[in-house]
Length: 501
Ligand code: TRP
Image 1 (cartoon, rainbow, N blue to C red):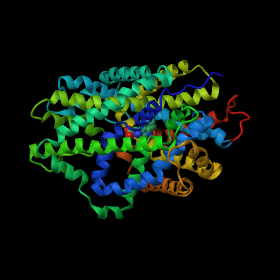
Image 2: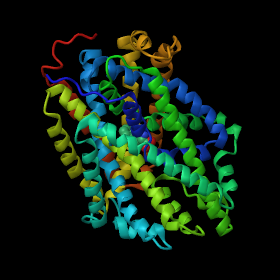
Image 3: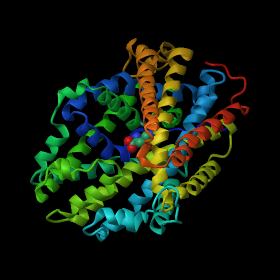
Image 4: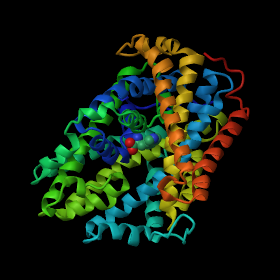
């Protein structure tokens, strides 16, 4: 067995973790979530969610990776015999996510090019659906490939492969650029936005506190969902990354730094997004709520480009800055998923890492072609919804049960406290064993109940036909589970005869 790869510096690890956490989601998900769930008041449930779930969970994932020195599958098999499949669930879910995340990266790549000539002219929305995606009539009609998306996809996968080709060595070098660069770009966009007329109305829309919202359970569920999503939990990424830390490494402080940097980026993004929306409202003589859209991919590919096209000068520069920001935000999230998959495979079978990286990228590319068809957007939408609302939440729940009850959180704490700069008290044990499972369980049940109510009313997600929901949602989840269980049952030299500690 070769020696395990190592991060060259502590900063390389922290940057890689921030790079994974800070992704496309930070640019639109947090700002819109805050705006819709109480504005400034949303920060209260958000902070509570960070303290009761986000921070304990990321510390747990760092600690698992560091202690067991392996990607998620082998790490979980060492935590509890028979639990290896939980690790494989995080890996197969990562694989599902990367196949569509890479397609969003493909669109962003295309838009780097389109920015140069403001190709969307006066109709960004029609341009996106008509010229770029060449969208078909529904999920039942794949309608062949969209050429611009295929080209973007080849470039995006090329970039992902290039970043990760030499494992954590090349990743360490890449994140030195792809983490600070989007922050600088974001700074430029914030300054531009806040110096535009009307910006203050946009910021008001974003942060004006409405404390009555704190009485709605939905607002709390959103806060927990957002924290879970933004920290890239339950995909095995943080476990894999922490497994490359040298023996004497801080755990808790690294986690705090990662969390605060990531959440700071989200908070800042709100000023850029809504400052610019305030300006668009001002120019059109409309209300911010009328022009802001509802976030999501719409923000990146038509709402924001439209707002930018109204700028008095420098439209090309600012849209370029925006898409470079999105590209650098997204690329390190994308390759972190590959690293998680590769770590899982290599640690179990001891295969040559470079070959596994190449093969994973190749298979990932081939499967991502589904979403590069003209009907691909519909499938992307369905798969994204089901893997996140059901898959990731369930995996997170199993994780805290495994650590909190089977392994015992106090035991993990007595492992990471001595090597860490910040020592955690008993509250950590209570969070992992009681609070986080209750919250994640609650969200999961809430999502399932919602789904059943909708089904009874004959309403399916996004207005898609039932068969599409079954294939892209439930069948996809079933395949994820079956593959994970099978992979967990196969024996290899690495998961045989190891003790739990
Ligand atoms: N955290 C990412 C974002 O905010 C999205 C994400 C969720 C993710 N889970 C992930 C990225 C796992 C990489 C790996 O955009």
